[in-house]
Length: 270
Image 1 (cartoon, rainbow, N blue to C red):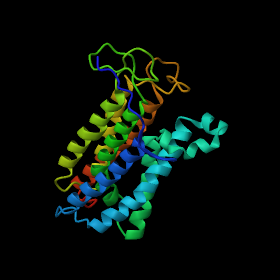
Image 2 (cartoon, rainbow, N blue to C red):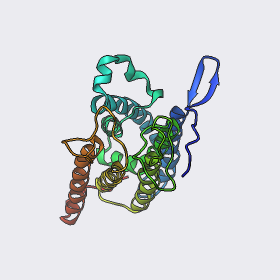
Image 3 (cartoon, rainbow, N blue to C red):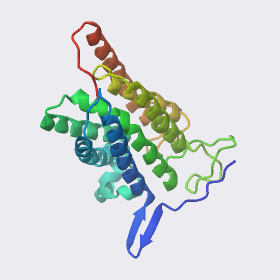
Image 4 (cartoon, rainbow, N blue to C red):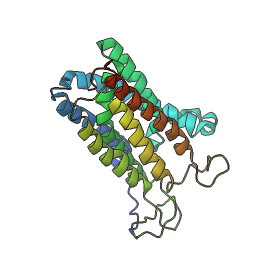
């Protein structure tokens, strides 16, 4: 067993100012998006300038933060919000929903695409390749915070979390960092290394995330105030939210390649 070493969520404290690791992980994720986006933009079949990447990141930051926090409040903590409305602004305490963040980013991408005269799918396919880096750093932030731990386990890599009781648990946030982050980044970077029909990369992103998140949910303990859904002992809210992602991803992939096969074309994704 690997004991959890009780990491402090505060990276630096300067008098009344406290800098949290969770926030730093988000900043690292945004930087990674820009850096990888600049590299990807140089590919001939992509053709994005560093300024375009910076502008998209600017829009995306608002989409991630607003959508992620609102999504968490609606999907996971609505009763807590009613009891304490100001909790919605305490991002440093954790509590960001990927599914809400995804919806927020979609809105941001739609606005960006419209203002720049680009296809929504061109923007979405470009961003889909880069997003897993931020997912990885965000889950590392969850680990440092000691939140979103998994079920009790006897595996040798089980960890004891301060808020999880005396028994070792699955470090499910590290599983997600590896699967939704590193693995997805590698697959999508490879898939996007060649021209693909528009929506294909976005579709693959949704499928991969849905599968990875669904799998980890089997060992991740649901929020105490939600528990398991529909009277089961295994179905979580996270699983429920992944199902429409999997369906949408499959539809986008079929749509992209069927139109390409019929010669209608959707252009190529970034």
